[in-house]
Image (cartoon, rainbow, N blue to C red):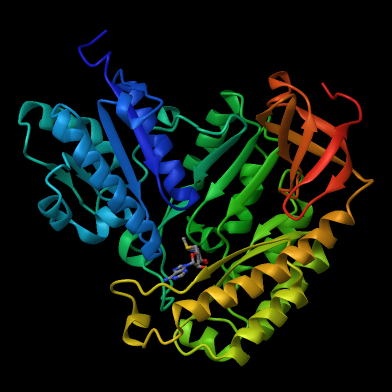
Length: 442
Ligand code: SAM
């Protein structure tokens, strides 16, 4: 064992699945250097904050954690604090300058540097070790290193960054332009995770269905990944409506392992707002895309993201969002109050919808959505679905997901985790189902 064998790390992750996957890579890199996971920041020698800049709220939570860690470090100067992710990339070196408790600062492409930077800090304590080089290869963390946090679902990055120009979104600034990973590398990683025992894979990318590499489009990528022996479920996120082609719809219909589930952010139901957001589609086009998908996969579960209170959004325009949400009938909806972000083009527009009004619109939207979800989930009672068990809820209960990504709670114990079980749905709430195992599969 080397001298680092006793070192323990703790990672706090903010934001999206990309960040969760990045944290899994950091955990794996640290473990490959002899670090062990700690249960709490107090028990750790190195705490890494993996930040999100998409909304102000996430950055405020990060700042609060950083302040708490700073206080902890006053009593424990040997504690090492690392910061990475989108806020780190956005704020750059000034973040370390204003927060002297930071020892290690890395951008979104520099996870691989963390162990070396930690060594550097240990040699020269008090001087922050920084790597924010955006030209670095974001995919250079070896496949086998990632410490997957979910026991059954492995995230595999297909592409990084984003070439879109949505007026509200900070991601192109934090993660840079699109970089597509060669399909062979993606397939190799999927094979590696299947060999480790994962039978479900979620391909990740900011606009994953814009994937293009060596003449292969996203439908081609799905086909080659679908063919990996031993894989049973294939999902992907996040998709952009403008990149949903007939080929993608056919892949969803025809490829055996691709699950009937799609997250397709719409953001607004108003053409004026969609135009100002520079989303690249109209309300009618989004509806056509949803119809195309359902024509190919009639029982497709569709989920979405919505922003309320975008600059200038009138009550009538908000009503258009409500009516679109009702028209599509989403299986799940993530709704957000508009949050002005640095460097985005929407920042030039006045943030003129009051916070109260944004809250009220969120309340109305969520109320409608919850009612719809209750009705939708209630209609599933009586059917039998295949559930891949992933979590122990305690008190003799476990939960897992159906192919449509619906959460089902069932009676059972930890021995069911990782197993596919046929479950009869017996009850439904607004966000999840309950069921009983009909017969155990092998
Ligand atoms: N790349 C994806 C896309 O283009 O749809 C998702 C990116 S973002 C991580 C996830 C969601 O956060 C977005 O779909 C949007 O609804 C929301 N979001 C992004 N920027 C926002 C902002 N400035 N204010 C409020 N919500 C925002």
